[in-house]
Length: 180
Image (cartoon, rainbow, N blue to C red; front, side, top):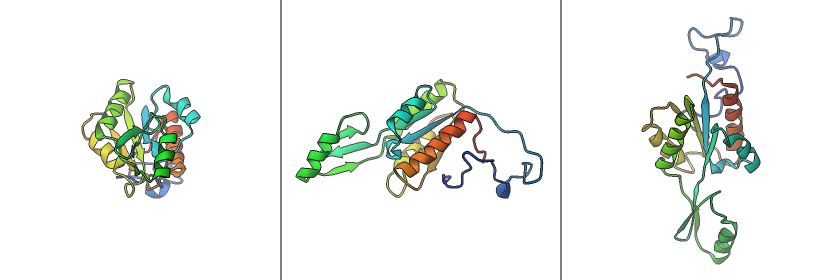
């Protein structure tokens, strides 16, 4: 598990203080950048603006997997079903409302789709593992596919997660991603 904080998205990688042997450090010539086509995957807990997601999703570089929402015994797909009124009525009546993690199969399908679209790797950034098993589900799916997948537990939720996803999408658009 690689934490998103300090990962170097949008900056020189590796940072001079952590440069690996054979890589550039402050005052030395820069090593050539590694260029790869990388898709970014996240979950709907990232609270990304719908218009921004739509502008990035057309070519497969960004996929947002919906978090299931359970209202009583019914399961709805966040972002797939119009559940605003259902949730409001459930909360007003005291009916239980919970979220769940997406299934590993959903992640596997998305990772395979990225590979079919010609992406060479995937960065999958998710809600804090302390709040959800989403990153674990993604990790299980990653073990089932041949495309390299880096799972990042953001350690956060909401737009704090979303801002990390936006930075990853921007870095992926440049074709340069951090190297381990």
